[in-house]
Length: 398
Ligand code: TYD
Ligand code: ZN
Image (cartoon, rainbow, N blue to C red):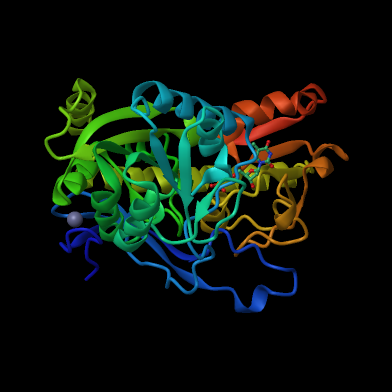
């Protein structure tokens, strides 16, 4: 039986995507023989209600050595991190000589913005990419102690799109206990289970997303390690996230937003097995519809390309059996992905410029989390008669 990564109680499985590759393992055209596959399935802890993957990818096979170095190539995300930095500067980094730490540095935009305001800052990540000052390590009690010794306590520890992919959260909270100032906060943002269910955004489920947080589960998680969930805020980025603010127990009174979202989750039955099983049936429905649409368009002689070789599209492509026969190529701005094939589904990745040369009749928007930005940028595609295919929150053509 699989057990909860946090409290060791049994996991109740509610959906099985079966054989899936590693979502970031873009393969060379001659390297498809030794791809790694694992069983991608999700369940909920019967005790703390934390929704999580049933099986873990062996750490030595995980594509990212450490925390994913996240480069969405999105101007919306750059703005998001700049705004988050400014918010911290106004509300949390107000004392004399404040100090901010980011776990997994996300292009360094947030820390860079803090640095421009004269605030001491440090990224903690093993890979050490980016332009800001980096402490090369996993964030745990040992690295936190080393940082404390050189830089003193942190007023803010921030992390975006990283905590949900750290299978063992105990060392993270032990590190926070060492490094956070007595009134410091740990702020993290990750995809929200409520949003995933509401939009049937099942492509958020892949190897690197180990946890699908809810307010209920994060509150239990924080309390388990001697902290309190002090605030929650819904964010529109990346298809719907929550920003959680965690403080040392007794140091902050939770804002009304915490109780409000908790009540909303209860009302929606977010962590009821019946709700999660209904989500599973919707996933199957989307697969049936999307595959039928793509086959019909191809049978009618239309050309189709995909847009955005995202990690999350790995689940869609592999679960729906979408390969190069249905969608001959995917355009993406990331040079490292060019000339490679999407994991498992083997769709060739081409540069973004290929998209207009010539436009396909239909574009399957794998990067739907950036829909607004991409559709604005690619206005000429629509004007030339092109149509976007979306599958979130349901299969539709625009
Ligand atoms: P991202 O949003 O990080 O999603 P995931 O975590 O699922 O990988 O990835 C966005 C991908 O889409 C990335 O490979 C870059 C690509 N992209 C484009 O090709 N054009 C664009 O305009 C944007 C915003 C992204
Ligand atoms: Zn649990």
